[in-house]
Length: 239
Length: 288
Image (spheres, rainbow over the protein chains, first blue to last red):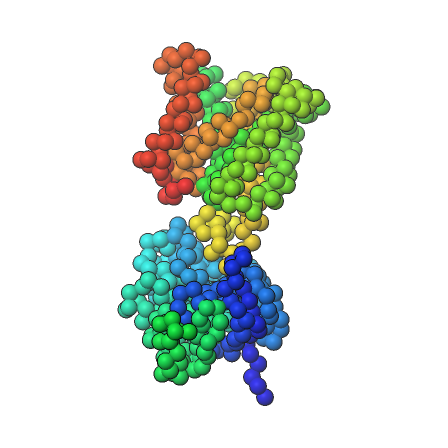
C-alpha cells in the first residue's frame, strides 16, 4: 500500500498581485522527511512555502494528511505546521524567552508553555544562557537558532524553513544544518527547507525538488540530485 | 497652594492622555492622531449629558469611556487594516470629522460657541468645586489608568502588542490575528482618553471645538516621544515636562497673547530636537 503523503500540493499556481510566480507545481513531503527546494533566485522556492502557509493566495489544491486544506496561518499552526521565515524576523526588543513565548501563542496553558521553553533551552543551550537578553543583541547565527527554536514551540509535525542560513558564516551554517538534522531525527519532524547552500544541505536531505522559473524541473533523492548536472544547468541559466 | 493643585490636576489629565497615547502609539506602534478626538469625545459627552440631560459627572465618568470605546471599536474595525502612515492619515481624517461635527452639530454642541456651565463632580454629598478636592478625583483616575497600563504592559497581551510594533507580519506567522489586538488597544486607549476628557470638561467647566484639534494630538505625541516611546513611566515624565514648561513661560513674564504661540513653537522645536539628538526620548529604548 502506498504510504499516505503527509503534505501534498497539486497543480498549484501562486504569485503576488498580478504577477504569477508558480506554474502548475505539484510536490509532496512524507512524514519525518527532510525535503529541499532548490533553484536560483526568483525560481519561486520561498513562494511555495508562503503559499502553503496561506501568506499569499494560490489556486490548486493542498492536502494535509489526506485532507484538502484552506491555509491560513492560525489554522495551520493549530494543525501542527510551523513556518520559520526568511531573514530570521526575531522581535529585537523582546527578550529571547519572550520571543519563544510568542511562538507558543496558541498554548493556553501557561505551564505547558514554560515547559516547552525549558525543553528548547535544553536543546539550544546558547539560548538558555541568553534567555534574558534582547533578541536584537544576538549575533546573526544566534538569531537564526532563536527563530528556529521559536518555530518549534508548537512542536510541529511539519516545519517550513525559508533560507535558514542566509547571510551566515560557514561555521554557523554547519551548526544550523546539524540542528536541522537533530530536530528531524529526535522529533520525527518533517522539514521542508528552501536553501542556497546546496553542498551542505544535500547530504542531510531525503529528497529534493529543483525549481526554475516557477516550475519543478527535477525531483529525486539528495545524492542523485547531487550527482546529476541538473543544478549546474539550472544555475547557469541553461533551463 | 491652589495653583499647585491646579497644576496637579492638569498633570493628572495629561498623564492619563499620554498613557493612553503611549499604549496605542508607543506599545503597539500605531501612529494615531486621533488622541485629541477621543479626548474631545469624552469632554463633549460630559458637557452634553451634564448640561442638557442633567447627568452627574460621576455617572458620566462611567459612561463616557464606554461611548468613546464603542466609537473607537467601530472606526477601528476598518482602521485596523491600515498600517503606518496610512493608519496615521485615517486617524487624522477621523479627528477632522470629529472637529467638523463638534463645530456644526449645533443642536447638541452649540457649534463654535462651545458649551459652558459644565458642573463639577458631586460625590457622597460633596461637590468637588475646589482644586484641592478635585485633585483627589483626578489623581484617583490617574492611578486607575496607570495600574491598568502597567498590567497591560506586563501581560502576554502587552507582549503581543510590542511584537506588532516590531514586526506585524512575523507575528501573524504564529497564528496571531493582529488586527484584533490592534482594535482592542485602540479601543482601550480611546476609553482612557475619554476619561481625561470628562475630567477636563468638568474641571474647566467649558468645552469648544478648538480645544481638540490636531495641535492637541501633536502635544500628546511630543509627550510620548519625549518620555520614551513604549514606556508608561516615560509617558508620565513627558506629560510632566510639557505641562510644566508653559507654566514656567508664564513666570518668565511673556504676555498672554504670545504665551500660547510660544507654547506651540516650543513643542514643535522640542519634537525636531528630539528626533535629531535623542530619538529614543528620556527613558525609551525604541525609535519611532
